[in-house]
Amino acid sequence: DSQSEASETLTSDRHIGIVRKYVENRGFGFITRKSDGADLFVHSRSIRRAGLESLQEGMEVEFLAVQGNRGAEAKDLRIINRLDSIKTTNNQKKEFSDANINEQETGIVKQWNKERGFGFIRRKLDGTDLFVHLKSLKDGLQSLEIGQQIQFRIGKNEKGEEATDVYLTKNE
Image (cartoon, helix red, strand yellow):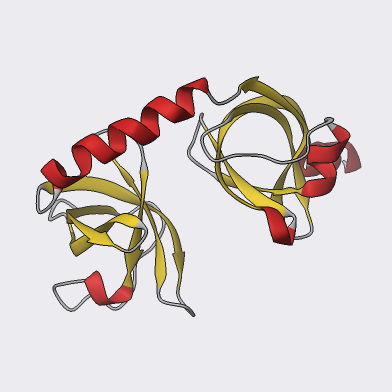
């Protein structure tokens, strides 16, 4: 039954996602898949093959999901939506961010790096990702796990908004 094993490592279906982060000087980034919120690694080789110099946060892309040696990877990228949508979201963020400070919100844990003590959560309100640091965990929490439902407040850091006063929602 080696055929089903092969199909698990290479999914031929294409996906749509949003560029979450791209570190140009290091030549890689992450794309958040729209269907399930999973983050996929993307290497600059895959971008150059698509005839692109770089990616920018917020770009909408179509890609092939491949199981690489470091997990799911996005290959064969095609840009669906360039940057017109990004400019508006960045401007909107600036307008709204002060109003959101200290507001209670809910979300789910998307990523957590135990060794480094930080991660990202997806806001239920608008689906955007927020940085969360170990120091922001309350109720004796020492760590978070992917998929956990949490409540938090919006705080500010030098890079923008972040989650503070984070605790698990009681219906866990």
